[in-house]
Image 1 (tube, one colour):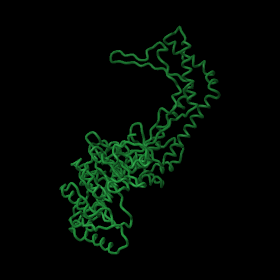
Image 2: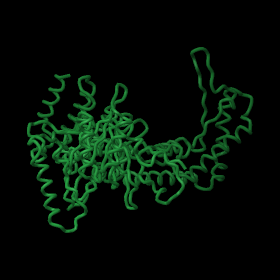
Image 3: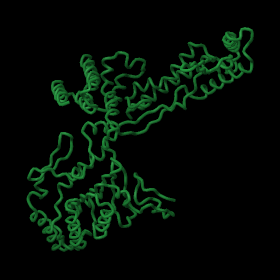
Length: 552
């Protein structure tokens, strides 16, 4: 059996461990990395074989840029000759490859092997995370596993911060720092510790002050990203050097919210059909569809075994799910909504209530068996259908074989209703927005704006629109609490009983007016709504809007 190496997958594949007969496209993840423009990460156990593997990878892809932190610890497999080869490789590439040394005293164990590939074909890139050392070129141990996957933008940003911080703590690879002592696993000789400590000191003493990790300054940007600056004030960021995709703080907030719920879609095929049935116009002597030049005419007939008032009541219940989703979910796209995990139980309990009410109403209408009900209604059904037929055939009655087909159709629909549910089922599926990889024809922000707008309007509609939660038979405070996926100040005030009617109405109108304007981008509108949800002062928000409008 062929195993395609398409992320996500783990390596080694469990089928190898079980020694099943398997044909592999590649025993590792080399083919995936061949399409990458950048390679970054932390690797331990690097030796001559790993360096050769990396050189071959570059030979196959000369556009590849490399930033690798090589972890060193006492008696590690990496020797001085290996570091010398790595330094030569670095020098030969004239800045396209940079290697640094991550010193580890092993008190906390080895670091994680993490490699990220900046993929030219996929904006998410590819991440390789696992315990197999030396780029995974040696057969892994039985307890080792490596995950190869495409991270979402939220995870990628977190890893980006982590790697920039690790890189900022590494020593440069220089002719002085390659002289790692040729240690073997310690036998308790104090001299070995002295040699190691001397090496560590040399790494710090023999490099320029501007390149010493002790001189690097760590700070946090307004976008919540790790920023490393050296003594000269230059920013140190291998992820920016290789253009690893990043997302704004607003985008990060949106995807963090999306992790708390799922897209919910209605499975229309699972609900019962309407209890009234269509009748072919041809049975009444008419054409169902007629065209004359640019003019078309459609003729449709429907018939119901149930009284119109009762049918309307059941149809309202049958079509209740979209109305329930308006209350228990946020807008996502046409035909689907996004529901918080915390609100699913309440939503489904309301579904159960509506479905139970509908089934009880239907059974009460029948007041007996289906055959008994049809027998009691047969005369009036035939009378009404025949009356419609006589409009075009005044001297004839509706043929009985047509009438029998009508009755069979109505009976089939009623049986399905009694054996099923009034309401359709729904499906839940996770989602996120890929904010990187925008182009002239692709932008995530319109969908993001629609979602954030729904999130923003929800508590403000609760306050400003007295009909918004009308018809819901559950505790409104409980509902609002379950719908809380972001610490919106308006939601907090509602839960405290502080209904800020004027503020809610003003904020809704403000966003609606800004949306109509051509001055503001969808991303900026999202940022403003988050500012309001965060409770930032109105004057500060207004100043930000004025600056953006003037720049636009």
